[in-house]
Image (cartoon, rainbow, N blue to C red; front, side, top):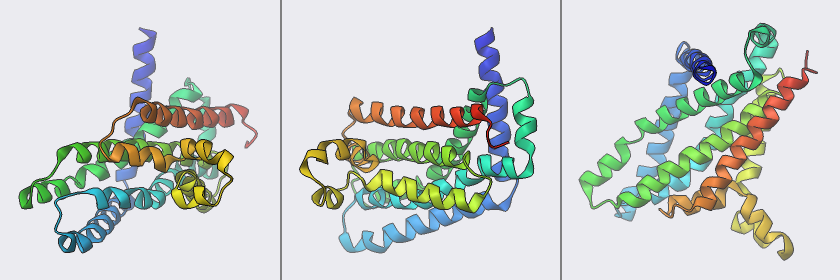
Length: 244
């Protein structure tokens, strides 16, 4: 009974947070920019390559998410602090985990809705040629895990400041660093002793594995652990209450 009440409270907060995105035109602008940028960049080279594949699209997604994810999370805590509503929110009979999880899953749901609209791309390619569905499934699964990692990191950073612009800039820099740390061009200039560690902790290397259609449990566990770590750090910041 307690568990169902706990989850019901998270769901109520989640629905409230998700609806707040669509109560302003910003959400529609984000989705529009995401779709226009993604479709234009992909189809700009698709017909030249003459290959029924979404590999180039999934190569673009991490970079589009770099800007979209911090833009989604920058207001989640920063705006609450600036307006003073965070004090009212945290005096309600709720646990810090409930609030953090509701904010995270609402942001993830919004990102998933944006991705859902992009399904017109594989449908169009399947109509034009023989599309291999394995890498498509892997690409979207990897995009959700990568996006969730960006969001968890951005949400944590938003909890550290009252300024949305600062939250966006630091979130962008942090997500960029977490993504490229395992990239080949970064590894080439780093001491060889650190190469395995950097490759493992880099978000990009795990995304590339899944996007190829190789679903390895170590990549899934890594993403889940990364998301949990920054949600846990977010809870610790909220529990600390030094921002009051």
